Length: 176
Image: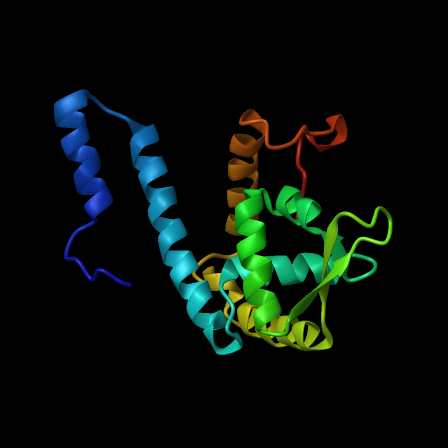
């Protein structure tokens, strides 16, 4: 969804903002982050389309791949992906219809439901990950040092928002 404009619309909006409301580097930064999110999500979803995945569904499959048993309670998926339970249900529904996960009763309590990755789901993750890695997750314009700096800058925002508590040994770095 490239705009191919002859000017930077965010820079222009920042200038208009300055005229009407005063300078705000924060407004320009937030608007840039939101636009970058749109661009990256569009690129990543295009790379994942051959696997009938969106980035959200891919993240859920990767999370299941990372689990020891290949299965997690739906509530744990929502917690780890930081999404609403309804979003998890919809994501797992789509993955189940595609044969990439199956639902199982939680053997620990018999009440809860687990999503379990299938062999087909593992294959999809492996192939999709190879494509995403080859495309550097849409971030090929940046050297590794810039990506690490970007991670650190955005991590500060996440800590300040209460996303997680930084351990004392991480305060001066927290490398990738």
